Length: 232
Image 1 (spheres, one colour):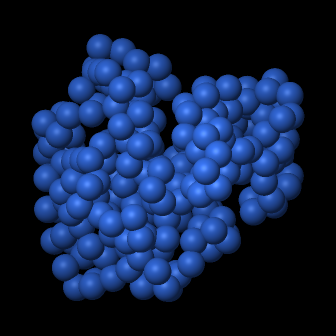
Image 2: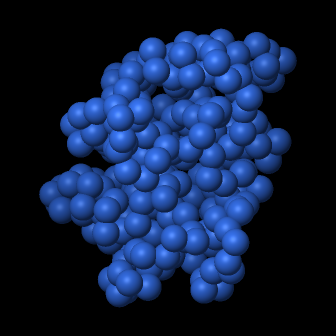
């Protein structure tokens, strides 16, 4: 997502259409200003570089900060969004940047992509939006069923107590990273390097309830044949 306000952390009457193309088309037609939700690319770059190779195509769902990835040396970044208004605007804006590709596509149906198409899927706010909207759990399950075919890096406000139950429904190896919010009024208690995972079995009152951070879940598909998720 590249325009408008970040999704609310709880559903309300004005969030019920977050999974519908017409909602975003109308919203972006009324407000064409763009900015990065949650975090800008420079703050996340060390983690992106740590997990995602530069010389293999990457997929960004929601068109977040992909131009920053190209500036950082990534060869090809494919962006999808359900909104034709967003895609047309981004295609025009980056017409002279062949490393960036923009496609109208619903993240709940990415059957056009082969499993080997991308090194990873990056999500900054898209799953959050679906979870705020109508039929939230159904839509989230459909999205995760699609991104499960690749490695998946999610930047979110969703604490482990809320996100892990959903992510653990699929066979992943899951790592958690934490980063301070960009405009937090208070300093965070977290001092570890961004690229150092946080143990997922720590007391949730320490990790899961800190509102001054964003959570980054790195989910790597487990091909071992096991049905349960593995968290480390």
